[in-house]
Length: 116
Image 1 (tube, rainbow, N blue to C red):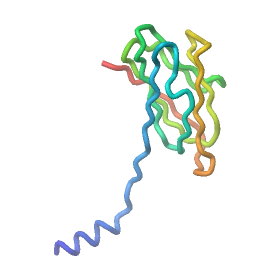
Image 2 (cartoon, helix red, strand yellow):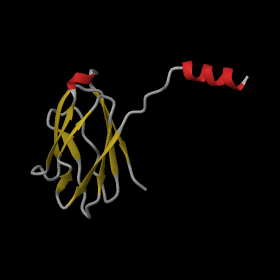
Image 3 (tube, rainbow, N blue to C red):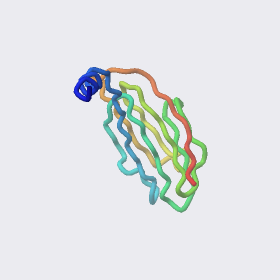
């Protein structure tokens, strides 16, 4: 019976878990400033700075609320393409997300997740 259950469990489809990439905001810098990810990856910006920041896409496809220290903003990319972004409070702060086109997908979905 145990062997049958094991065999059946191996035949069941497995759910693929998407990756999560963290980008720290500190000292007026996004680190890393550029990331290359697969479609379905969740990007989490964490404000580790002692002043507020806000993330906005250059093409206006997403914009976070103002993030205080330790607040987070989450975006799940479905790809493919390049997403340029900046801090709308400090426009000299820039970054880029490259969604690998060879893995398919399309679009993006963003939501804010405020820290404790």
